[in-house]
Length: 213
Image 1: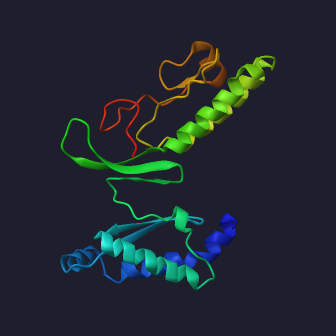
Image 2: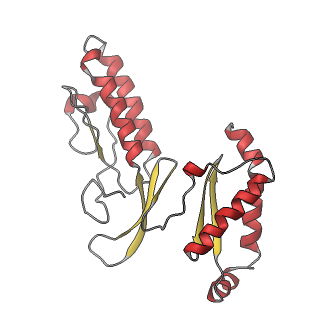
Image 3: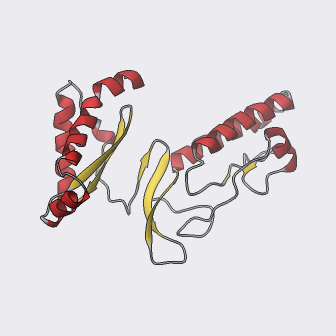
């Protein structure tokens, strides 16, 4: 399904959850609803990819999954079971290339939700860099290689610029190794341009590679 058709067809899901959110009449109403054992929900959707965030129990989240199935069934659609999961925010989930997970903030006891590139996204960009800088490209025009490399890495870093982990080693394992972040190879940086984000410590490890479960 194209993004346009998905937005048209799945707009009824937006309306469904907007109505449930508005039915509580505001923050006080939602808090009172939860005090009496109820759950509240918020929907985040992009085309046919969606996440429903539940302030409630695992049982309420599973019941909501059945509710969503019933809503999409009204327009002849069904949830992809192999892609539909009920998870706790502490376990995290992948959405639109981001890992969304709650961690203990580094150096404190506070718990915060962080977003950073998913393992799959990291593997994909590393594969692209490796293919572009492998020995099979040794006879290609260096200017063309650096131009394409810059396009890939700028696009990738721009997309993930809002994530917590803003530096990533994408060493290709060849003589044209590249690192996105501080310490880039001088010749490579000259080819792809400056302006990379400064490294940011991960909240849990204080380093560049957060654990993913």
